[in-house]
Image (cartoon, rainbow, N blue to C red; front, top):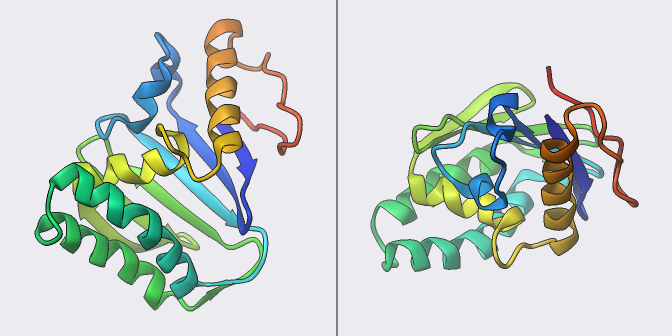
Length: 174
């Protein structure tokens, strides 16, 4: 199941295994033990470093809150996370970035299908998802649409979900 929504620089798709729709609760989306893939598709040309800085602005405070520290494993996880974007150069329109959350407190980053980083950090996994579906999301409408889409899928079954106004068509991952 995938829900796709448009942000300023990219469209966002969240893929979950069908088995996770049973007993759906929005809070589960941030759980680092939940296997999921968050995909960004560039809607305009963006420098990788610019994307990294954008993630930093949001993730640094979240990681400090989670770890209670400015230094340590949280900071190291963020360095590895951002280095993937700093190395990738400019991402053109249609370029894809995938965050694959393995359900084992890890996230693998793929840029244009090429592995860019793998980070083991439950705090980072949680913080990345909180950016979009947490209590203070960067795009409240994105969160609302994702949660609504998954809730409707749970309530009505796959293939019977209406696309929320202002979003892209919602493909179903099989």
